Image 1 (spheres, rainbow, N blue to C red):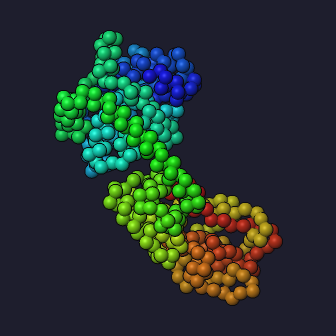
Image 2 (cartoon, helix red, strand yellow; image 1 turned 120 degrees about the vertical axis):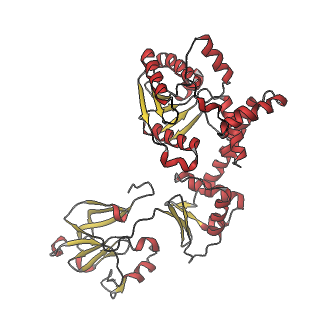
Image 3 (spheres, rainbow, N blue to C red; image 1 turned 90 degrees about the horizontal axis):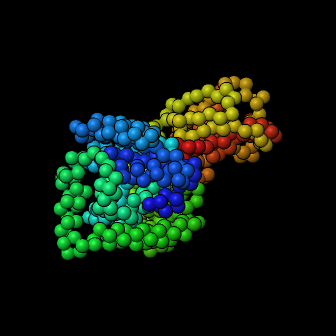
Amino acid sequence: MAQVAGKHVSPGDHVVLGLSGGLDSVVLLHLLRELSSRQGFILSCLHVNHSISPNASLWVKFCEDLCKKLEVPLSVENVDISPHLSSGIEAAARIARYAAFGNMKAHCIALAQHRDDQAETVLLQLFRGAGPKGLAAMGEATPFRDKFILRPLLGVARRTLEAFAQEKNLEWVRDESNADIRFDRNFVRHNLIPVIEQRFPSCRETISRAAGHFSEAAGLLDELAAIDASGAVIGGRLSVARLQGLSEARAKNLLRHYLCVNNIRMPGAERLGEMLKQFSSARQDAHISIRHEGFDFRCFRGFVHIVKPLPIAAGFFREWHGEPRMHIAELGGDLVFETGTGGINAQKLTEPVTIRVREGGERFRPYSDRPVRRLKNLFQENGIPPWQRDSLPLLYCGEHLIWVSGIGLDPEYRADKGLVPRWEICDIDGKA
């Protein structure tokens, strides 16, 4: 375990241990406490109280007393699993727990999952029909938000942890729900693995070893996807032509990669196959829209776009008073003004300047040697995606439309040097 921790943790790093109070996490607390003094990292604990068990408050008290005795700082996070109960109690607790982990300021979150947990996870993933990445189960060190999850006991059998705890006369709490075989993991642990062990005594070790093989295979698939994504993912858009030019299996792999790098939850195999089918068959002029995990996947001019839907912005109106940057949440972006060539002539702004959106029928003249055109036609000619057209900011001086994002500035308001507007659309994480 010391080797694992030394490989991933440096002196001065802050390690937060997820302390449930059970045997596994209590053993890991003692091991990390000893290591922290030798390797120079900072150790603290987090106990997540799901308030599921009637003994939950006793577990909180146990963790508080234990950490006080060992002089290790402890944070207690009370979480509400009710918003996630549609996924089941186990999944709801996990979602809430990992949300609490994500809020911690630390270099890494250390968890006490061991080899037996790994074998159980592989079997559960197999029964769910998972692919190589799912069957790789848990990694020794896996990225997690702005930190990573460290599992230093992943190669250690639970009986080894039990022997250590008995040798050191450690105390721990016992979660009564661990015996409830209505939960899938408990069924696998108590009813399935013991039967398999009768024929294959080393099954926990060999299943965990298989997880390592799946992890290598998943890594190779990730490398292949990165190769395929080179030149296929441009500005956050995925090339339909690239998908069409790959075998079905390879195209699915690229699509999974595209979803993963955009932090979008993976759909099931059937749903993923349907998405790929629609994308791959899309013509250049197709207007395909697929809703998944709160996002719209749209095809436009040969590319797949990931769009976070915005509420209809009809009637939007805001005054501009010279601010260099305006965040406009309703339109999903920031309006920025910078001094530059061909910008707005401030002396022409003799009436209030306002920001509005398209309502239909607008006309605009972006070039002095061309006539006034319908805004709808200008959007089409300039390749503005249909879903952006009703939420792009339009700049008015009085009732005169002087600037349109993606189109340009009315030449009557242009100066050799002036304020150049720029519209920065927020990405799917809400950042401009």
